Image (cartoon, rainbow over all chains, first blue to last red):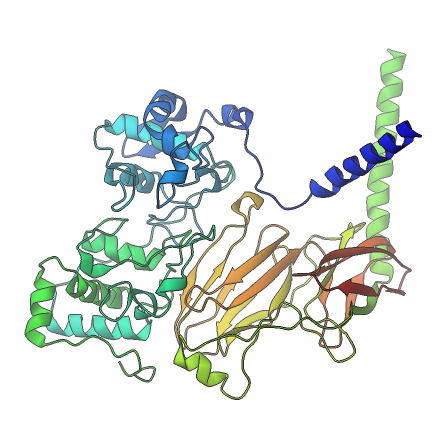
Length: 289
Length: 245
């Protein structure tokens, strides 16, 4: 009798396990999977990075946050915000490629050197270019996406035109039309009506960029970087791609207008002051900024 | 030597049989496709669906001035019929992976998703449109490990449709970050499927004859399965009853 009960119990536990297994779950990557991808390469200019050569550097400098399996679950994970990137997902904020596509090797190469302002990721300018490219290959070897998929085609950025008062005003119209202020606020303070409820792809709270606090955008602070940010979107965050809705010429206008919202001194800021440019009116009817 | 010859003979016979079976199967499916139909009902009273405070965006609250928006986790008709339940063949279907050629539309209207649940075949193209005079961002959240890659695109007023498809079968939540109450689903399945209407009725057409396991998916109540047999040119029936969770 006792034994029968035990058998029943074992059976039901077994059945529960079988039922539980096919439930959707993050596929677990193992060290074995990673070993098979040790041949991963990265290319930038005429350099070639090799994943296997980055093993020691990753263990020494990166593993504390990004974790041994690249899942962003290193021992520092609980203490830092924003959270370290989970490389297994192959989803990256800073790309030159359209939303939903893999970044290029150069994009990752630049990200490692640039670091991420207002995060625990410093600028790794201490590495040689070769070491950095080896680390790019290492980062890539964590995600199965790089074995079956090619990076997206980088977006085309036309040469930067001359800043004019007309362009700054036109940029303000774009800011109003595509409603950047819904999250970033009319003054770019990151206090728009939707700002408080934003979450990233993993459901963690995330704040929109505050243009006025003097911080550098995470994906670079050159004019071309800012152009790229809103035309590719920052995948994994609420920041969408505007590539379908802002024409290349208008995009430069918007870059110039965004400069006027930043606290740093700029030609654009001075021109806007001279123009007496007012912030957009969130209650204006659509199409009339 | 003769042993090896025997083995080769058996192997080629098996391969031939398999090929034959495959060809036969295709012939049969061309002979007469049947359908599976039925209704999906909720057992008991429909759970109360909370209202949505859209005051954050005056355009949205104005659009709902006379008809306040509410959550759509359970959409239940007067007779208990459940809307937005997806039915698909989870076992036994061997036909082509992609069967549907129509291009369904997922619209953003009055700051809600219409439909709330969009069922799709793997690789089936669909369009995301906006009817609103406010900016939305359409942001599906698949698990990148499945092969479906998350993307995030803005759709300001008057924006052109976005055309997309999904590579793998998966239930994908979709959200708008600007309007956090906007929440919908792309239910990507392999093979024929149907979604229930406001009376809880559904009909899956283009089903080759055979014995199948049919799965009914509801976003909160979960899934249920049933065995269904479809004769050549015939019809199978499967009714489901869910309990609210």
